[in-house]
Length: 307
Image (tube, rainbow, N blue to C red; front, side, top):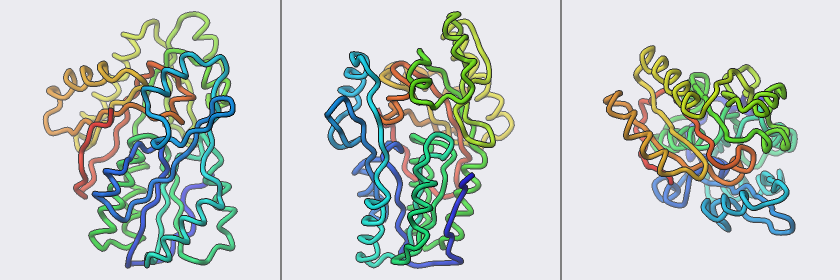
């Protein structure tokens, strides 16, 4: 399993951070962190291909997803495109790149990129498997970008990223498993039976392979949400120095209300809310709910709701 590759010693200099668009980061983030590059992934309905975060917004996407007779397809950037980005960063005077991407537990992109970079020597590139996706991965990229601006070395930044990704917690529930099953992202298919029996499977990526797996079942959405809240409560009682991400698909009002309900119970905890972007949304469908937490980094980064 890929964890990180091509870490180049104790490099300090002008370090660029590259992250894919499933992170939910936007142009506003690149203005805050000029050393941050966001690479769009794509979603395709029939013959129409859209760059995530550029050509289609979340509202339009989820409307089309609900109406689509066949599941749209998704694709990461090509390895050649990634090399072009790294070349451009070298031309801009960067001395190293840290590339943080969606976990190999749900895509082969990083594995393929590692192979493509075996003979690449234009600029040192460190590939980091985030073990996750969506805004928690974006949080890692913001931390890395801020550390680079603070003159941290590649080694120091990757050490902090290891701390963040190795201490993630993730639980989520979807309204329908069909998209995950069709897209091959759900690894233990017995959860399909749960859907047929009107049981809500609880999903998680907290396993050694960082795959999406069904770990439990409950009878209603209300009980599923309570299950997620119980897991969060256990985590925050064990270690309150965490940042919490409340995420969903096409259910912004529910996310905002959820944060208003939870935040007063945990004073001092930062809660960020996030409407999951199209590429990941393709596979988990409308009305999904997720709670993810990560250690609160000592590196101060911006907090922003992304709905």
